[in-house]
Image (tube, rainbow, N blue to C red; front, side, top):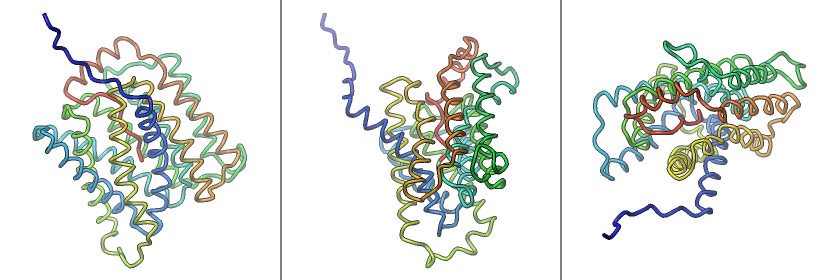
Length: 328
């Protein structure tokens, strides 16, 4: 009997490295691009344009490739996820970066895995974190205190409290959206689900920007070339190329390896902010970066309790695999 089974060709090492570079560098650079974009573009409308454009392109491509039309329930769930991730999460980032350096913003957003552990623990029938995870939580919260504490703590000026508050609220919203998505019925295609989340989240950002008065006060003649190019960069490289590389990596390597972006992106953001925008790397930022990245590494590389793994696997039958994306 002839074996007609076919196997997918193993991707080359160069392709894998290029995809990792895209996820590490492109996503890490989005904080810098946001800071440049909002220098002359209204922050919430800028974010809305980014996600509506990327979502429309990705949705059209996925439907043309034969993905079935989403159900009403899937649109409802992606609207909830998209609003929490993009209006709450990314909206908090773009508003905060008006007063907070891009590298510091990336470090505070890196605490999302900490909040996800807390939400999983507190929800009904939630899973108690392991001892290793509790240590990671404690270390991570120490890192946040170092970063946003009073002036003089660990060297360097303090972070703007309003901006820091927006980033923490945004991280909580991102964690809430990610936690909800674990049990929600979403399209089986990760790219289609992401396109829908971008469309719904972009629409929510548009409404929020209009409510804030950004439409009424917007002056296109004041838009700079640098800001417009930064927005285009966010659409193409931050949203389309970066996430496509992320989803492809999930199919060819382990989720644990892919999740390393969570503690590489902040380093990239801090270094780019320093090199291009002259954002200072103070002893405070260096100490907080080391502590927060260590905490995220401890949490993301730890093993889930067996019961929790079974429960999450059951809930993921109707949604795409993989962790949720970075808040920027």
